[in-house]
Image (cartoon, rainbow, N blue to C red; front, side, top):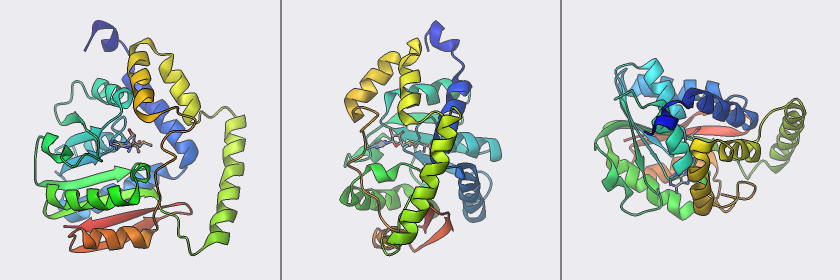
Length: 257
Ligand SMILES: C[S@@+](CC[C@H](N)C(=O)[O-])C[C@H]1O[C@@H](n2cnc3c(N)ncnc32)[C@H](O)[C@@H]1O
């Protein structure tokens, strides 16, 4: 790490990322709690965790705080978010980070371990197309040990309830507008602030070359229903799969290898 980067308050960047994500997901922390309860129940308190599409390392941060004997590998493609993750965990040898594109057929070869106890991911896999996600689920069955657990918490709208979905969406939009008027940062605001941080500016520019403008990027991804995720996990080779948590907008699908 450069001398300048050593003086950046990486935790403050992580916290502002968390606030920005909470603007979209007010129950984000409850969702992380349900994820870690599931890991503890199925793998015990010292899991080796793969934090998939880790961003700033939000899941790793919570795993290592709750399970001090755990070890985490974070994987992401975004150079700016990985800079924050690597800066924040620079002195913590329990956390390692790998740059990889989850759409790459061979990305798992970059992992430092095989036989993970848990693969965890949040608010990320809707960036992929449905066929890419089905292929990823098949790869994940291969990086988990038998008895290992996979959890995906994400937007999972049920297409069979369009009026309920629309009403809840409108209600949520009104809450977001109120919070925005009170000063909350959204995705585009947060990326503008990151671009203005000299230590991050180059990585942010590279990130925008990879993903596109933050006002429009990842809009070509696809969302699937909770039932689709459960079925796809079974088809990918998981012995059991079910939804273990759901809110008005999100769900968490869990697969047991
Ligand atoms: C909204 S962020 C969520 C980050 C983190 N899980 C959290 O909850 O704070 C979505 C993440 O998915 C990552 N991502 C999207 N597509 C990816 C891909 N093809 N390969 C690797 N990471 C990807 C993005 O770079 C971003 O860090």
